[in-house]
Image (cartoon, rainbow, N blue to C red; front, side, top):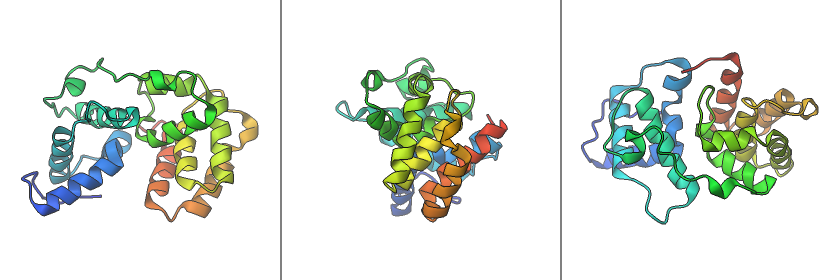
Length: 205
């Protein structure tokens, strides 16, 4: 996705671009994170504006807060400072206590929503929660495939591609191929699958 040479000046086109970037979250800059592709300057300006203009409300759901944090961290990664307390202090992670004791179904759903956090070499509370429960994430992946929830399956599969302790009986590679066959026409599914494909090769950061 590109914003072309559009500045973050506030036109109608900028509003649409900012909204689209809020949907993709930190994955807007995934080519930069995984492949070291320099971001388009216009796209980067709109992305930075989207983060600065839409901080999470005090009553925002945890996944919304973490998504914003991931976007701010993506900017830190390419040295784009923000006047944002989450961005200014790399240690200022949001609370992840809602994942403690979550059922494997809830855990998988939340991890799929927060798939932009699944990057090799990255460390945060959500990553640690996933790392502690690879079998539960694998169960959630199988459940998502059986329910034909391709977005959740692709997001869970992206996490599984990074985790140690994934059961060999899962057949993750074959499972991801099936998700691509059945759901790969959805661009958001295709994005997660491509990230899952690239990450085990150690392409990164």
